[in-house]
Length: 161
Image (spheres, rainbow, N blue to C red):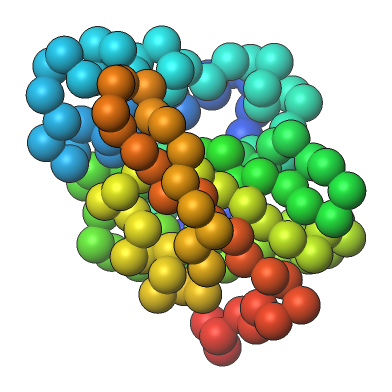
């Protein structure tokens, strides 16, 4: 078995795989069953989403370690709608690798800004990677507020070399 790391475009037939990664990644943070039941329908990835958006999967060997999606382009900005890592791969650099790839993709497509709504558990990760907090927005459950963030791509440099 190889540990080769490859980032490739997602295929419409992988919608269930991406949904499972999303759900597992969110559950990793210890959210209770009530929250997960409310959030589950919001986490579903459809074949149509994959066809219509920029969605990439990181594979390590033969396993999907995580994915991201860039969606809802508007003017100079595009939204990082999803960035989820399979729990078996959390803490192994997959998030950084996927985020660098997403920011480079957005830049190559001509966008100057990548916006996102962060899970509170991921805010520190995005800040470490260079995102600025711009505010907050209501989450799926009453009283839950989520950080809104952005990357200015004119200032982003890929430091993976």
